[in-house]
Image (cartoon, rainbow, N blue to C red; front, side, top):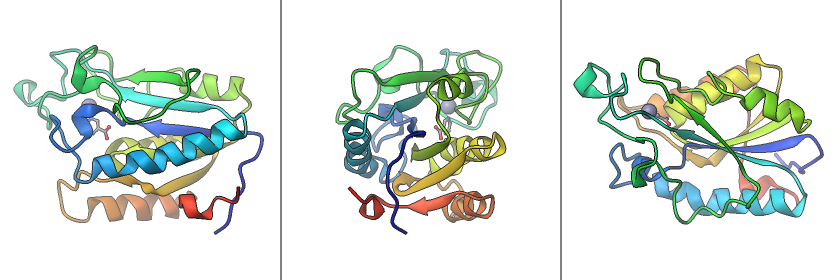
Amino acid sequence: MDFKLQPGDALIVVDVQNDFLPGGALGVPGGDEVIPLLNGYIAAFGAHGLPVFATRDWHPNDHCSFQDRGGPWPPHCIAHTQGAAFATLLQFPCNVSVVSKATKGDADAYSGFQGTELDQLLKARGAKRLLIGGLATDYCVLNTVLDALAGGYEVLLLKDAIRAVNVHPGDGDKAVQEMVARGAMPVTLKDLAQ
Ligand code: VGL
Ligand code: ZN
């Protein structure tokens, strides 16, 4: 599927943070492999003067999703720690719009739209079509994509720039199927006509 960047496109890089890279507190297998691809998309967006958004998981140190509070996850992405920082090799433009989520102790948020200003920021930039990639396919990418579709955006899923946690084998594949069934179009960097 060939596609061309056009006015109204926005790139959303989901949660590419140190704790989600291999060796991190909640390492996603192959999570680091998305970085060079996302840098390719970021460069293309820069060349077209189109906006780039980055979501980040940004938890207090006693977040309800942590195992010591009965949640499913080890402590991860604690605000202002090195683990919560964006992957060093990601080449965000200096005007990247950063959106923090799940910042309060008692609620989790897998979607970048949940409890954030992402929708308003996108609308303010005239965004109509969202290119979405990052981590993790079966949690924050899935929920961000589903909310984007429900909110009336067209979505291109960056299939080469997502990786899954796969708590249960096949979770990532199932998530991709669900996103596509709801209307997301899977694309890769090779499909991008320059
Ligand atoms: C995520 C698990 C816990 C994600 C965030 O960014 O996909 N996954 N918190
Ligand atoms: Zn989290």
